[in-house]
Length: 312
Image 1 (cartoon, helix red, strand yellow):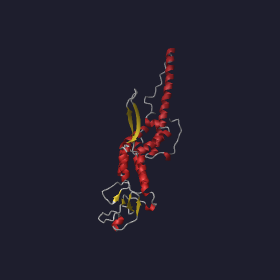
Image 2 (tube, rainbow, N blue to C red):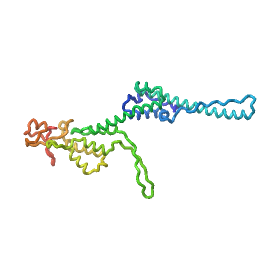
Image 3 (tube, helix red, strand yellow):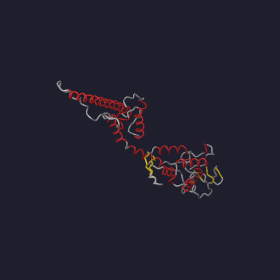
Image 4 (cartoon, one colour):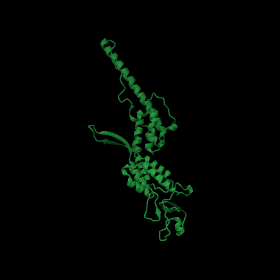
């Protein structure tokens, strides 16, 4: 309400230039709460809709006592109404002016000029109608990003963090779940917030982004065995990002963690090379294209085919 004197540094007011509406709106709602102006934004504080109460007309000087008594009661009722009306109008005007002041700081000048003559609530609703549609484009961009992101054999941690950043930007939606009636009890209803792209689907997208097996016999996929195990042992609907990302990290560390940083795969490396002395095998490794007969340094682990450090 307007009686609160809480102030805010103008540098802390979130800026809006027409992009990233959802993130800006969330921050702006917090600003309205801090400055006690949310009421004029959500409509709980409004200007008086009825006309200003009119003072009752006093009786003539020669009116009898009954008329004067009625007038006195009407006057007292009017004084209460006019005081309440003026207080409500003042509170609204102050909060509306404060909220508009926040908008004048938050909005790009080009946006502010288009809406400065509106009330604070009208500005808020206008911005939402005009710019919330951009959110769909942003959602689509984030979805396309996680869908098209291709993991290589370099350290998976920053790649996973990048994937999760864009996934977590996808909006949440409220789902209502109803459990059947049991033991004479009525059905129970529970709500949960879930992302528009379910976590199990996100796991499938993440797994498909890994460099998996190809038809090239000279390539070996570091993650293929892990992928096949997950698909075999876990129901798709029960896939969790925490489990999948942990498995990716473990798989990478077991294959490359023992190597020196300089010997580990670099960005842009997607497969290792299974060196084969048979010259009839197609050469995709840069080392073996140069010299197909040369045995380059390899790492041999028990139960694992040797792989050349000439990355693909």
